Length: 401
Image (cartoon, rainbow, N blue to C red; front, side, top):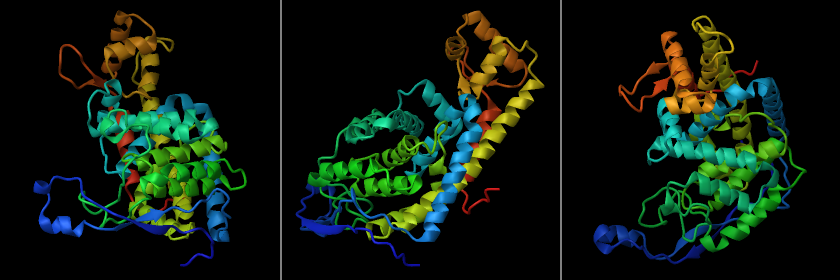
């Protein structure tokens, strides 16, 4: 259904192209297909654009905002044990949209040692970028966006962490040239001007919060200011704006997990935005938020149920190191002895004693099979996180009752 909104659509400009790939790596026919002029987007300024949306879209966004605020308030008192896992789950979902997938145990292991270049390590980098986005929420600027990207891409120096791109990029097609791409973002000479305009839009205070975040995110993805990491940085920007506008105060709502239920619809909404219709991206964001709240509530319920089961199995005093270690597992479901000792602030002997008590209770299991450098996991917590990821991949909109 066509929207009655008025929103500036992208334009196009032509640029010459010459492939930088060595001739012996590209066939003559392919090189000919990717030679000559190509069209890159011209991104219109939106800093002062009139934000007008159909009443049904605004009503949906308002419904989603109410649910987000209620969810945030419900979990406010519980955020200490569950906040880290909600953030990690959102980061994993955002990464999965970019086809970066990894199980909960691999991600937790990567958090203990981020030295490799696996998908899990990249997801952990996304966790750090999300954390930075929230920390910078009260001072959003172009520099803040660069800081988020620098953290996200710290293990991928080929993509210039924390620097605006200085080359043409494109989405889809081949790596030879932009001529057959699904979308060609603006020429790199225009990136900084477009970002400065976007930041002026972000600082506006006359746009409903969720609508504001959705439009800013779509404009960011249209500018595509980096050679890689644009999607994950752009979704971190959503959370920074939700926090900056006080829609969320305590937790990270797993919006990306909601978007995962219909990634085709999400990308189609970005295309509509670029054509001058912002209603679909606002709708997609609102629906994703509603799905995220349901999925997030289920995750917390599963974690609380696991914790309750532990109370029936752990044979230790309530003030013992074993119980404090159990609480740690709710935010760090894979541990080693050093992590246990450091987090508990106790001796090595006490940390190992707590580990043995939780092993005996079936709360954790050792899975490395090594005599030294051993790792333990909390299977029930990891299962809850993996179940969350499975639900995020399902289509359809759950009820919010």
